[in-house]
Image 1 (tube, rainbow, N blue to C red):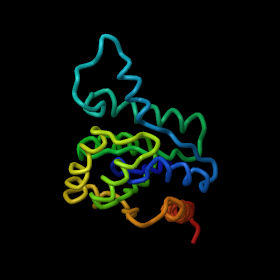
Image 2: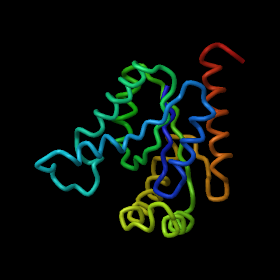
Image 3: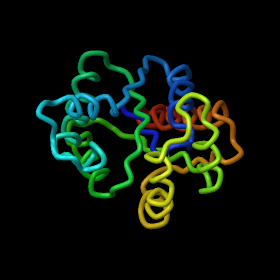
Image 4: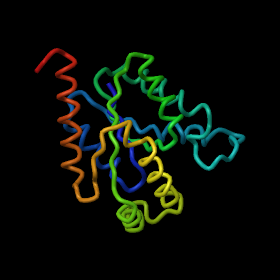
Length: 182
């Protein structure tokens, strides 16, 4: 199965995903951004579209990479990846489901001011205009489609450890139900 942890920059995806991986047996974190980095290394460069997600190969390559990883390792892939374009999410989720891979979709949510503060004060990456540019598109996606497509966990005041525990408990209970448990 796949546990997709969505949300924009500053919501806590990377930290929470690592904690979820520790809580779910036989799980691994797969950073789909690395697929984008591979495409960014193509020479001559692909057309500049501002974000590798806009390149048509990225989405099916994420699906195929996840599928192949699961075939090889079994278990669960935890994927921390922002996807704010609805058609991109539909393409990825349909591709995974077409291979019979269940997807549990979570969105880590924080209000816009909290996101801006976290991006501004990030001691690892530092402030980033790229990351700031996705605060408003996230808010729009959250209002129009994203929150309806996933289980939302508000991380505005929730620490990553608690968010991870909530995700793991939900996934484990759903997995137990799917296997015929109570």
